Structure formats: structure tokens, C-alpha cells
Image (cartoon, rainbow, N blue to C red):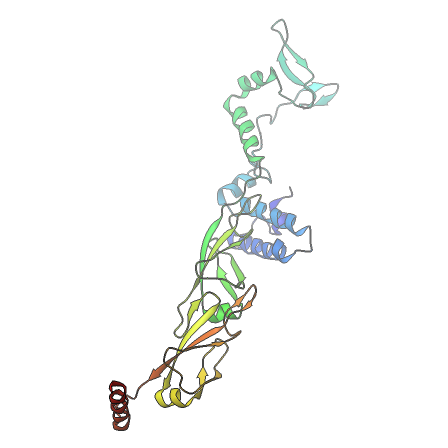
Length: 312
């Protein structure tokens, strides 16, 4: 892996803020969701995450600057510094020469092959360098595996208008990243959306589990993809029929109700509800007859006559 400073394009003297800014820029530019037709984007995105995993952590950055870990975060074994051997005119040829005890207990040299320190020489290195050798060996084995970054949880509250318009909302994630989220079709309150690759950093970045909350609306109640609204009408309008102005998420529209409409009757405005995978839902308009606030003598007398006739 390349030098993490080179990957992020920052100098070694860069501040925390400069490193974070550079990482955000690269992560946004190479995110796989935005580069579906670029097969190299995923590798660049993972490379930027790995670089930030080191430089974004003050302790790891200090270890890297001191040469204690390499660009992949693996420990560098430094036990051989200043030590050299000679065989065939080559100095420090540890890959082709190692030490071991001969059959008679004497100390002699032998070819180590591709893996230096294999077999009996492990004991010698352990005796010479003790726990430092064993720790470096264990640490290298641990860090060689790909570690997936942690998943994070976040929440976003949206309005019904946001859902209807499939709005784009900018949110700040728990890791400080600002991202734009498009409200998906058919989303429901409490639904969890997985934002892949935007979670904790690692060789394979984690995800963000985003919970969508739909704020209560002052006029509509949600019934799946449909919206229900109650509209008051005057008594005479219900008896004679009329045109009503009915609210929708895109503005009020006219709707005609027929004569002799009873209170509680429901009418359907097709395609005015919430968007879904199979099209838009409807608005269900329930009529509520509104009686006069002050007593109307003619209306009261008419009601008495109707009641008397019904009792006869």
C-alpha cells in the first residue's frame, strides 16, 4: 500500500482538520454508489479509508511517523537494526542465511529458504530477542486480515412533503461526515435504510443504519401509501351539493360532492397520496357536516317537523 500521506494528498505536517477534509473529499469522489460505472472507484475508496484509519487516529499516526507500523498498519520488526552477517560477499543477507544448532550441538549456519526463521531457528530468535520477536510475529498475523469498519446508527426526521417529493436531505453522520440522502419511494415511519460504506473506517468500510422518522402532519394521517383528511362542509352544502377545496401535499385542489352527502362519507382523490414502488397512493377525503354555531329557528322547526312525521 502507498504512503497514506500520499493517498490523501496531504503533507506530513498536516493538521487533523486538514487530514479529515482531504479524506472526506476523496471518500465523496470515489464512493461506489456514485461511481457505478467505474470499477476502480471501489479500490480507491477502500485505499482512502485505510489511509484515514492510520492518519485519522492520533496514536496510529504517531506510530507510523516513528516507523513502528507500515502503511497497512502492520508492526515493523526492528530487532535486526545494526546487525549484519556475511556470506559470499553479501552483508545482511537474512533471507538466505540463518542461525541454528548443528547436530553436534555446535553453532553453525544453514540455508533458511523462502521463510527465514522456520523450524529450529525459531527457538534461537526467541532466545536472542525474547518476547519482542513473538509479539511482532503475532501482531503481523493479526493485522494481515481485512478488518471491516464498525456499523453506525443515525436517525433522520422528514415531513410528508419530503416523502412526496423524494427530497434530498443533508445530514451529519456520527463520524462527522456530511452526506446527502434521497428519501426513497415507499418509505414508512421507522424504516431503516443501510448507507453502505459510510460507517467506521477499515480495510472494508462499515455501514450507517439510518432510521427514517416521519413527522406528524397537521392535516393528514398516513394509511400505507394513502393519506386521509377530514374536510368540514356546511349543512346546506351537504344537502345541495358543492365544490370543496381539498388540501394535498402539492397544493389545494377542487373536488365536487353530490347533493345529499352524509357526514362521514369518504371520497377518493386518485394519485394524490405518497409515492410508492407501484405508483402513487390516494387521498381519502372524509366529509364532516358542520352545523351552525348559533341556533337557526327555521332549521330547528324543520327538524321538529321531521321528528314528528317519523314518530307518526
